[in-house]
Image 1 (cartoon, rainbow, N blue to C red):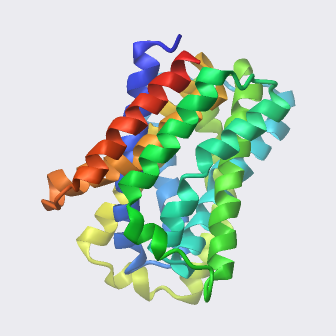
Image 2 (image 1 turned 90 degrees about the vertical axis):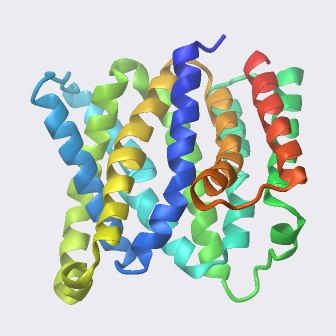
Length: 292
């Protein structure tokens, strides 16, 4: 049974990630993708550095660093870069449809490599949550799905989703050796070091975006670094230590409903009755998966 702390951590994580799409879109208006990823990683690393000024971290054993490097490639810099480039090359409709495959990817990978069982109630819950997400997305966006003209962007988005599934399962496998805080910090610092050369090269090639970017663009970077890369990843790994990968992955189905809810609260956009029904199904499906 998942604890209330883990449940709250996952819901807050998904809320941050739901808003991240808006922040990423705002940042992409002024910064190129590699610059965005590098800056958000630097911000996240600074958050950990400030935190560790007061709390001494547990340093990973030398034998863990190859595993941490693997986690870094699949869960931070390279993952963010592929995802951000993909979003610039495909439509919002396609990205939304592909995003709902993330929990399915985690379920299959965890079933194969971690031997996490696919019990009937858990499977039914995943199907109910998937149906709910499809209702939230709506028939219009689904009908707008097309691979014509942006195959590369689609492949990049799908690759980033598959990488996150591998990252989740690897964290579950390797994460028992480190607290969530030390694990998240290690892969964040490594990811920042890996992204710095590419970020510096892009800045030297085209320094103008950083020079002319308005305050709202920097606020978007700050949000991505503090909430999405720092807090959300930390909370996600905390919850992952307490329960199965498949149950954690099921919570990713709450991101589309939370995106609509945020649009309603922040932008005043209306929520269709079909979306309300979909939100109910998502919550019911996640509950069933958690019980399964």
